Image (tube, rainbow, N blue to C red):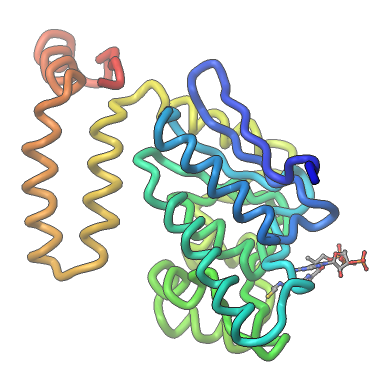
Length: 259
Ligand code: COA
């Protein structure tokens, strides 16, 4: 039976993709939400945007996995696989993915925000991994991504207590990259996405890939990845435009094509 979409995709004039979760009161990340989000990410892979914003609207980013779908280990295996498939695909998009966090980002909501490259939070935002309060553990990447973002000891404290982390603390520990007034949140994420949209998109993609791939290995492996991507970026039209513009007009004046 057809149902109303629970995830919506819009594109701005400058090619910014805005993905909005629209699942009831709290944006629980049900299997329907994760599958629709996965389909949207797949569609963006073939028709790349200039940047991506992920939002849950003005009140709640997402309250986590849909607890009503929980059962035993078999259901858990399916749920964690579905989370990882969708969030890994989102994280791998070759464009900056910005989480716009207006309110609660708990459990899977925090994990979704962490799968994004950058988190802009409202002063009303609240982060956390409260799974422990249900007697379970994070299954959407939380044990891994939170530790990489805030360090192992702080990740353990947040996950083992299940406590809520308000916006200012989130910023202090690097979980939120910026905190802005609630009413200014959309303007800020759009301004950031739009400024990226007019940038050198191939260089952005190669930089993101080098940082993410490098973090998975040793420093030497990361430096090898950087050497490879540094050579590759010179194949892009934008590298020729950028270097020529610098030599003729000074820094920051290049008009990139995205190719
Ligand atoms: N999955 C399924 N349903 C959820 C949910 C979730 N993760 N989070 C909230 N809901 C439901 C509530 O049961 C409630 O249902 P009802 O209206 O039928 O009673 C409804 O959404 C509204 O929740 P409520 O707690 O009344 O809203 P609130 O605005 O007071 O609080 C939260 C919002 C997000 C702080 C609170 O709902 C919460 O803590 N949710 C659980 C977060 C969590 O533990 N996530 C990890 C899951 S593993």
